[in-house]
Amino acid sequence: MSRTTWLSHVTVLDAGTSAASRYCGWLFVQNGARVLDHGAEPSNQLTQATLDFLDTEKEPAADPSLTPDVILVDATSPTQSASRLTGVIDAYGPAGPRADWTADEVTLAAMGGAAAYTVGRDGTPVYGFGLRYQYLAGLYLFTALVAELSAARPGSHEVRVSLLETVASVLPYPTTQYAYNGSDSLLEQSGPRFVVACTDGWVVVYAGLAWTAITSMLDRPDLDEDRRFVELGDRFAHVTELGLLFDAWGATRTVAQALADGAAHDVATAEVRSPEQVLADPDLSARGVWHEVRGGGHAPTIPNLLVTEGVST
Image (cartoon, rainbow, N blue to C red; front, side, top):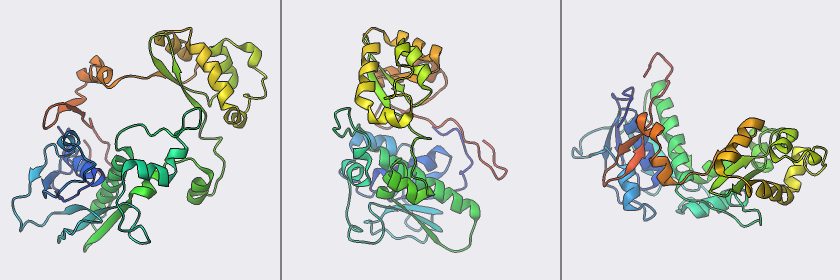
């Protein structure tokens, strides 16, 4: 499955119970590490299909005397190890009134603020699907652990990642952004996005770029100076009206025509593709993107990494 071997000298004991910790272990597998499955009872949020994906190519931990380089645990796990590094996933952080709470993805989205950001045009929160924040937390943990391995500091160390902090870290809210970088302006990094129905499918359009490019794509030059939309902040304030313009545009076009319009006018437009379409994509298949997972089915393969410090893959 892995196309890289730069972590082949590393042994990891995966004693995680959450998708986040087990995904961290999966990333170690992807990059050549030997990952041993402790056999910890998984969270009831993880379906068998999810476990088949997350535990692909992990080995049973048969030798109890083995001292791994890294052990992966969740904060609620009693597992202990003399490993050099311990990676811990916390739901809400190691201290405070919620330190011993568990969390599912919907709760994290709500408490972390994402449910107020991913909303439909009528303001109804839209969750989506999957365990995306847990996977992102697993990626954060993997990155931090690899950094610690590269530092080669003496002694044992612990790296902790909070699921709630993971959600907050990716949101462009003024309060969160101000806490992270001192700026409360969102206009330089965001813009309205619309899912638009065409005659034979759906496209996503990003409406945060030059307004005249958008009016050209919509074939609405009469809106070039419309004060509701010229400035990005005004587009947010009139997002309902702007959405109706895109709806009218998409209703007269096929997906192919909408994509051609976007390309012709330099407006970011992408097709909404079903999982079946993605799996059947001939270009992805030709590049060897998919691999079989335990239990059947396909999962993506990380093709390569560019690693500094003299290690290349």
